[in-house]
Length: 344
Image (cartoon, rainbow, N blue to C red):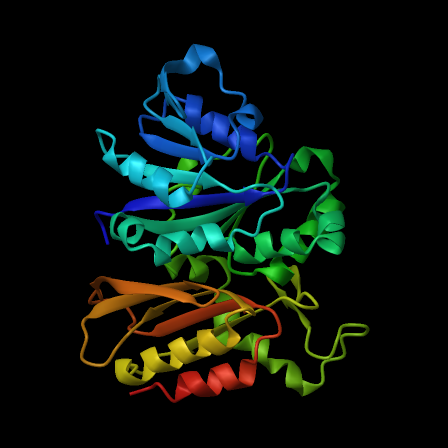
């Protein structure tokens, strides 16, 4: 997996700050060679002073990055990039403001040529702190972009009050408690936080939400009164941050310290995503298989799964399997019971 070029899918509403972020990647002296694939050059407004060479649809920047448009098929563009001299540190693909990031993310699993040479690193969503609450009310794609994300930039935080910021953050957490959330102004963020995240590496989920993985989010049967909260869309307190589970978007996590049987696990997860694929936006996990001293990592976008051995388990590391699902109307009980049957 290590020699594959990491790909970041960048999504977010028009005006949220994607362009600002892309301009930084294309112009700052970060010493890395990034390829940026955008919808339209016009939106980016490439600074001609920074361009050292351009051929048809590819602009080479003086900081070593290159920029090209998705005029045709994404796969064809990626093929062309791979043939260029010199390796890229990473590829960034921007999706249009209204687009569902799923088809773009799926490209990196489906196409064999692309999959051999690249790996989906992370889906990064740029959201506008001032307008996101409105967008979430009227635009299902805004909610999908949040649910899909591995990393969220909550941008333009200087335009809202502290209370508004808390509220929008609670909304985001209700939809996707697992993404790494950064509050930014003018999309200022160390690029290492956006690129090279290694989305596979679920360890960072534990940094963010240790309580989510302790199963405390399954304790709502005990008749907590959440007022007007829907029956199972409970809110719970964790470190002072209140989590609202969104009406139609949920997340759940599974964990086991007993090794799994790969002959049971693979058929189970395949079957699950075939049946529930349209409702499961993302799933990912680290797995400890019986008699296997390597960590197995996987991630999925709707019905498409991709996985590989990642590295040996460290001696001091707790060998446990952890999986997270984000989606709509997830059949929690079925998923939990199915997972438990995969224990060796």
